Length: 245
Ligand SMILES: C[S@@+](CC[C@H](N)C(=O)[O-])C[C@H]1O[C@@H](n2cnc3c(N)ncnc32)[C@H](O)[C@@H]1O
Image (cartoon, rainbow, N blue to C red; front, side, top):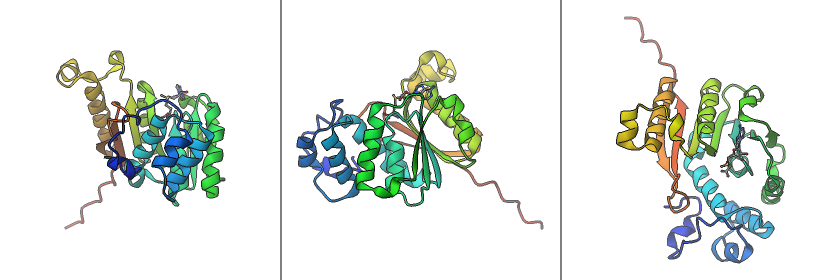
Protein backbone atom coordinates (compact mmCIF):
# COMPACT_ATOMS: atom_id res chain seq x y z
CA UNK A 1 0.00 0.00 0.00
CA UNK A 2 1.45 3.35 -1.03
CA UNK A 3 0.70 6.10 1.47
CA UNK A 4 2.72 9.10 0.37
CA UNK A 5 1.96 8.64 -3.31
CA UNK A 6 -1.54 7.20 -2.95
CA UNK A 7 -2.31 7.48 -6.65
CA UNK A 8 0.07 4.53 -7.22
CA UNK A 9 -2.42 2.17 -5.54
CA UNK A 10 -4.84 2.62 -8.42
CA UNK A 11 -2.32 1.84 -11.16
CA UNK A 12 -2.43 -1.57 -12.82
CA UNK A 13 1.16 -1.41 -14.00
CA UNK A 14 3.62 -0.52 -11.29
CA UNK A 15 6.48 -2.54 -12.73
CA UNK A 16 8.57 0.66 -12.88
CA UNK A 17 8.49 1.56 -9.17
CA UNK A 18 11.82 -0.14 -8.43
CA UNK A 19 13.52 1.33 -11.48
CA UNK A 20 16.99 2.78 -11.00
CA UNK A 21 16.51 5.07 -13.99
CA UNK A 22 16.22 8.74 -13.20
CA UNK A 23 12.64 9.93 -13.14
CA UNK A 24 11.78 12.02 -16.20
CA UNK A 25 8.93 14.37 -17.00
CA UNK A 26 6.99 11.98 -19.27
CA UNK A 27 6.23 9.63 -16.35
CA UNK A 28 5.93 12.40 -13.75
CA UNK A 29 3.42 14.35 -15.82
CA UNK A 30 1.32 11.21 -16.21
CA UNK A 31 1.35 9.96 -12.60
CA UNK A 32 2.23 12.86 -10.29
CA UNK A 33 -0.33 15.31 -11.57
CA UNK A 34 -1.90 16.93 -8.52
CA UNK A 35 -1.16 20.23 -6.80
CA UNK A 36 0.01 18.55 -3.59
CA UNK A 37 3.48 19.47 -2.37
CA UNK A 38 4.76 15.95 -2.97
CA UNK A 39 3.58 15.89 -6.59
CA UNK A 40 5.02 19.35 -7.22
CA UNK A 41 8.34 18.21 -5.76
CA UNK A 42 8.34 15.07 -7.89
CA UNK A 43 7.65 17.08 -11.05
CA UNK A 44 10.52 19.45 -10.20
CA UNK A 45 12.84 16.48 -9.62
CA UNK A 46 11.71 14.94 -12.89
CA UNK A 47 12.31 18.14 -14.83
CA UNK A 48 15.87 18.18 -13.47
CA UNK A 49 16.16 14.40 -14.04
CA UNK A 50 18.40 13.92 -11.04
CA UNK A 51 17.15 11.01 -8.95
CA UNK A 52 16.24 7.38 -9.64
CA UNK A 53 12.54 6.56 -9.47
CA UNK A 54 13.18 3.95 -6.76
CA UNK A 55 14.90 6.42 -4.46
CA UNK A 56 12.18 9.04 -4.74
CA UNK A 57 9.45 6.51 -3.94
CA UNK A 58 11.51 4.83 -1.21
CA UNK A 59 12.16 8.10 0.64
CA UNK A 60 8.56 9.29 0.24
CA UNK A 61 7.03 6.08 1.54
CA UNK A 62 9.54 5.85 4.39
CA UNK A 63 8.93 9.47 5.35
CA UNK A 64 5.16 8.98 5.48
CA UNK A 65 5.53 5.99 7.82
CA UNK A 66 7.91 7.63 10.28
CA UNK A 67 7.08 11.35 10.23
CA UNK A 68 4.67 11.39 13.17
CA UNK A 69 6.94 9.25 15.32
CA UNK A 70 10.23 10.99 14.82
CA UNK A 71 9.64 14.63 13.86
CA UNK A 72 11.59 16.88 16.20
CA UNK A 73 13.01 20.40 16.25
CA UNK A 74 16.49 19.06 15.56
CA UNK A 75 16.93 16.16 13.18
CA UNK A 76 19.74 14.38 11.36
CA UNK A 77 19.63 12.20 8.26
CA UNK A 78 22.76 10.05 8.49
CA UNK A 79 24.46 8.31 5.55
CA UNK A 80 22.02 10.53 3.69
CA UNK A 81 23.42 10.25 0.14
CA UNK A 82 21.41 12.82 -1.84
CA UNK A 83 19.55 13.73 1.37
CA UNK A 84 15.95 13.45 0.19
CA UNK A 85 14.66 11.84 3.39
CA UNK A 86 15.90 14.67 5.60
CA UNK A 87 14.76 17.27 3.08
CA UNK A 88 11.22 15.87 3.25
CA UNK A 89 11.18 16.52 7.01
CA UNK A 90 12.30 20.12 6.42
CA UNK A 91 9.66 20.59 3.71
CA UNK A 92 6.64 18.93 5.29
CA UNK A 93 7.05 19.27 9.04
CA UNK A 94 6.60 22.75 10.52
CA UNK A 95 7.94 21.57 13.84
CA UNK A 96 11.32 20.72 12.34
CA UNK A 97 13.68 23.68 12.71
CA UNK A 98 16.87 22.14 11.40
CA UNK A 99 17.97 18.99 9.60
CA UNK A 100 21.62 18.03 9.39
CA UNK A 101 22.29 15.86 6.36
CA UNK A 102 25.51 13.94 6.83
CA UNK A 103 27.44 11.62 4.55
CA UNK A 104 31.11 10.89 4.04
CA UNK A 105 30.70 12.09 0.48
CA UNK A 106 28.43 14.73 -1.04
CA UNK A 107 26.96 13.38 -4.29
CA UNK A 108 26.46 15.87 -7.15
CA UNK A 109 22.71 15.17 -6.98
CA UNK A 110 22.44 16.78 -3.53
CA UNK A 111 22.81 20.44 -4.58
CA UNK A 112 20.41 19.93 -7.49
CA UNK A 113 17.89 18.18 -5.26
CA UNK A 114 18.07 20.99 -2.71
CA UNK A 115 17.48 23.54 -5.47
CA UNK A 116 14.35 21.63 -6.59
CA UNK A 117 13.11 21.42 -3.01
CA UNK A 118 13.66 25.18 -2.51
CA UNK A 119 11.74 25.85 -5.69
CA UNK A 120 8.59 24.20 -4.26
CA UNK A 121 9.25 25.05 -0.59
CA UNK A 122 11.36 28.19 -0.13
CA UNK A 123 10.85 27.92 3.66
CA UNK A 124 13.47 25.16 3.84
CA UNK A 125 16.27 27.63 3.08
CA UNK A 126 17.62 27.95 6.61
CA UNK A 127 16.49 24.53 7.75
CA UNK A 128 18.91 22.21 5.93
CA UNK A 129 22.69 21.84 6.18
CA UNK A 130 24.83 19.23 4.43
CA UNK A 131 27.92 18.12 6.32
CA UNK A 132 30.50 15.98 4.62
CA UNK A 133 31.59 13.77 7.50
CA UNK A 134 31.97 10.17 8.48
CA UNK A 135 29.25 8.97 10.82
CA UNK A 136 31.95 8.28 13.41
CA UNK A 137 32.71 12.03 13.52
CA UNK A 138 29.25 13.54 13.36
CA UNK A 139 28.03 13.06 16.94
CA UNK A 140 29.73 16.19 18.29
CA UNK A 141 27.72 18.31 15.82
CA UNK A 142 24.38 17.06 17.18
CA UNK A 143 22.43 18.40 20.14
CA UNK A 144 21.00 16.09 22.81
CA UNK A 145 17.52 15.00 21.77
CA UNK A 146 18.23 15.20 18.03
CA UNK A 147 16.08 12.69 16.16
CA UNK A 148 17.99 10.41 13.80
CA UNK A 149 16.71 9.01 10.52
CA UNK A 150 18.55 6.90 8.01
CA UNK A 151 17.61 5.05 4.83
CA UNK A 152 19.71 2.09 3.77
CA UNK A 153 22.81 2.84 5.79
CA UNK A 154 24.77 -0.25 4.78
CA UNK A 155 25.30 -3.03 7.32
CA UNK A 156 26.78 -1.86 10.59
CA UNK A 157 26.34 1.81 9.64
CA UNK A 158 22.72 1.29 10.67
CA UNK A 159 23.98 0.14 14.10
CA UNK A 160 26.07 3.28 14.36
CA UNK A 161 22.94 5.35 13.64
CA UNK A 162 21.14 3.53 16.45
CA UNK A 163 24.08 3.99 18.85
CA UNK A 164 24.21 7.70 18.11
CA UNK A 165 20.46 8.01 18.61
CA UNK A 166 20.54 6.28 21.98
CA UNK A 167 23.51 8.44 23.06
CA UNK A 168 21.54 11.58 22.15
CA UNK A 169 18.25 10.27 23.54
CA UNK A 170 16.09 11.36 20.60
CA UNK A 171 13.70 9.33 18.46
CA UNK A 172 15.11 7.17 15.70
CA UNK A 173 13.95 5.48 12.51
CA UNK A 174 16.06 3.32 10.22
CA UNK A 175 15.46 1.32 7.06
CA UNK A 176 18.33 -1.18 7.30
CA UNK A 177 20.00 -2.83 4.31
CA UNK A 178 22.73 -5.36 3.49
CA UNK A 179 22.90 -7.43 6.65
CA UNK A 180 26.46 -8.84 6.83
CA UNK A 181 26.21 -12.32 8.31
CA UNK A 182 29.73 -12.11 9.71
CA UNK A 183 28.81 -9.19 12.01
CA UNK A 184 25.35 -10.41 13.01
CA UNK A 185 25.31 -10.28 16.82
CA UNK A 186 22.28 -12.56 17.26
CA UNK A 187 22.95 -16.05 18.66
CA UNK A 188 23.48 -18.73 15.95
CA UNK A 189 20.27 -20.56 16.92
CA UNK A 190 18.23 -17.38 16.37
CA UNK A 191 19.97 -16.72 13.04
CA UNK A 192 19.28 -20.30 11.97
CA UNK A 193 15.63 -20.15 12.92
CA UNK A 194 14.82 -16.67 11.61
CA UNK A 195 17.44 -16.08 8.94
CA UNK A 196 20.26 -13.70 9.76
CA UNK A 197 18.59 -10.53 8.39
CA UNK A 198 15.55 -10.89 10.60
CA UNK A 199 17.74 -12.02 13.52
CA UNK A 200 19.84 -8.87 13.04
CA UNK A 201 16.81 -6.60 13.40
CA UNK A 202 15.49 -8.60 16.37
CA UNK A 203 18.85 -8.06 18.05
CA UNK A 204 18.71 -4.33 17.21
CA UNK A 205 15.25 -4.15 18.72
CA UNK A 206 16.40 -5.76 21.98
CA UNK A 207 19.35 -3.38 22.12
CA UNK A 208 17.10 -0.36 21.68
CA UNK A 209 14.62 -1.64 24.27
CA UNK A 210 17.49 -2.21 26.71
CA UNK A 211 18.60 1.38 26.09
CA UNK A 212 15.15 2.56 27.26
CA UNK A 213 13.40 2.76 23.90
CA UNK A 214 9.98 1.53 22.83
CA UNK A 215 10.34 0.01 19.36
CA UNK A 216 7.83 -0.44 16.57
CA UNK A 217 8.34 -2.14 13.21
CA UNK A 218 6.69 -1.30 9.94
CA UNK A 219 7.44 -1.76 6.24
CA UNK A 220 7.49 0.21 3.02
CA UNK A 221 6.09 -1.52 -0.09
CA UNK A 222 8.25 -4.49 -1.08
CA UNK A 223 7.59 -3.55 -4.70
CA UNK A 224 10.06 -0.68 -4.22
CA UNK A 225 12.70 -2.70 -2.37
CA UNK A 226 12.90 -6.10 -0.66
CA UNK A 227 15.01 -4.35 2.05
CA UNK A 228 11.84 -2.79 3.34
CA UNK A 229 11.72 -3.26 7.12
CA UNK A 230 11.59 -0.07 9.18
CA UNK A 231 12.59 0.12 12.85
CA UNK A 232 11.21 3.09 14.79
CA UNK A 233 12.26 3.86 18.37
CA UNK A 234 11.15 6.36 21.01
CA UNK A 235 12.72 6.81 24.34
CA UNK A 236 10.22 5.68 26.99
CA UNK A 237 9.28 8.29 29.59
CA UNK A 238 11.15 7.68 32.83
CA UNK A 239 8.88 5.85 35.26
CA UNK A 240 7.25 8.30 37.66
CA UNK A 241 7.79 7.54 41.32
CA UNK A 242 4.81 5.89 43.00
CA UNK A 243 3.14 8.25 45.51
CA UNK A 244 4.08 7.55 49.10
CA UNK A 245 1.27 5.86 51.05
C1 LIG B 1 23.22 2.85 0.27
S1 LIG B 1 23.67 4.53 0.42
C2 LIG B 1 22.17 5.23 1.07
C3 LIG B 1 22.05 6.68 0.72
C4 LIG B 1 20.70 7.35 1.02
N1 LIG B 1 20.39 7.32 2.44
C5 LIG B 1 19.59 6.73 0.24
O1 LIG B 1 18.64 6.23 0.83
O2 LIG B 1 19.65 6.75 -0.99
C6 LIG B 1 24.76 4.53 1.82
C7 LIG B 1 25.43 5.88 2.05
O3 LIG B 1 26.30 5.77 3.18
C8 LIG B 1 27.42 6.60 2.96
N2 LIG B 1 28.51 6.14 3.85
C9 LIG B 1 29.23 5.00 3.76
N3 LIG B 1 30.09 4.91 4.80
C10 LIG B 1 29.88 6.02 5.57
C11 LIG B 1 30.46 6.50 6.78
N4 LIG B 1 31.41 5.82 7.43
N5 LIG B 1 30.01 7.68 7.29
C12 LIG B 1 29.05 8.38 6.64
N6 LIG B 1 28.47 7.98 5.49
C13 LIG B 1 28.88 6.82 4.96
C14 LIG B 1 27.71 6.45 1.48
O4 LIG B 1 28.46 7.55 0.98
C15 LIG B 1 26.30 6.40 0.91
O5 LIG B 1 25.83 7.67 0.53
